[in-house]
Length: 344
Image (cartoon, rainbow, N blue to C red; front, side, top):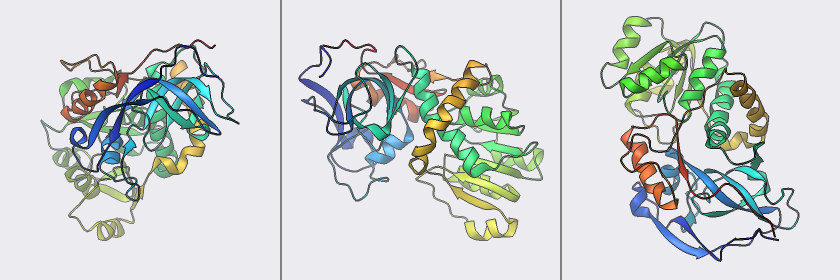
């Protein structure tokens, strides 16, 4: 039975056609609150995160064979308010939800397999960053990085949602870490979480920095920007180096295979959905690191935006703009709805 106070109508953001401009290809609509099917839950969204993947989803990069309309949004925290037959969840449970769309909604239908229970009394945006971006960095470095002590690791977009975790996890592995960012404020943040060499690419050339300070090259690159940044990282990959490419839109003019061959280096793609079954193993490990003070989590609800703090489903658009403005530090979160529930 649904919890008390569940309305008949809700708002959600729907992709109505594919394209690169998120505002132009999506619409904020009002629709009836749905009923969960077998092994599904209806979750009242408390927080949603903003990711580059949300824009790529609206552009059709992840699901080209699927045709709009479809609900946008990849990650969120919420409270279970109704259950379908056979669901193993319970009403009132606080959960992290993920999937190919569906989360930019005041109430979301989520399959049991795309939900992780979180051990808190009310949804906390820190868990949104930890469960989404934290596990992405942890899995990518574990499965593809093969980090060794004293190796040099370069993280692009290091002060962003995933980068902040990659920096700290690489340091915990005993590596020397270089991190790219766009402002002095972000460089200060990177230093505060252990980054050895922040590079403010708007003030100094990454190419020049690596050439002068790291002539042997970079052992491991965690690359999530693409384009010219990808080219620079590839150029400076050390012999036997590993480059983790997690940017779906990467393009390059360089002869990738030839350059990698000459260095006995690897270009390794990483796509989180291939590792969804292992996310639940990494969440408690990250929680322990946070509890012990070894891992810091930065969330940003628009602290540097004149439209912040971001509240309400309508603020998703402001969050997308904020991401593109590069003013954020850490994970961008939107407060969608309340964080408690009453059962009938």
